[in-house]
Length: 212
Image (tube, rainbow, N blue to C red; front, side):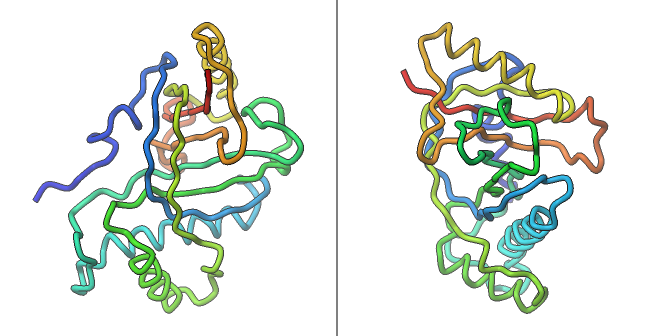
């Protein structure tokens, strides 16, 4: 059976052009971990990665011991994503430069068959393998992002401002305003592994919520 690869199946969500475009993002299910601090240096971010990948691959590989949930199908684990914000400002990816002030929700999309029970089973299994991880920080969440402007940023993370400026210009020219309110954030989807990819070859989807 061919594996479902969300990046290929849903190109509108994961393969935008290098020019901004409008998209209405539907509800999806994620495993998420909340945290704060510079992702390059803070232990909490590293721990979040351990949890997210440990749980996501635990669910994917449940078929190996016959414990796969009802409705299971073969799939590729979707890419890491991050919602970014900061206290006291509507963070747009530009107006806070001290990364120690960042707050984040790191997350990985899950297949539709992943329920709270499936998530809890995966958490129990990972807790036995890695008892030092505080898995109470991980949660299953449904997230509907709604109307957004997005772009494919090619290059280093520190060069993102040039792509963000294109988003802002496109939104303004088409009668939209950025809408960082409630649970709507500066959003990044990481299609490249920075450990294996040169900075200039990194591919990151940047998405900003908008309203008319």
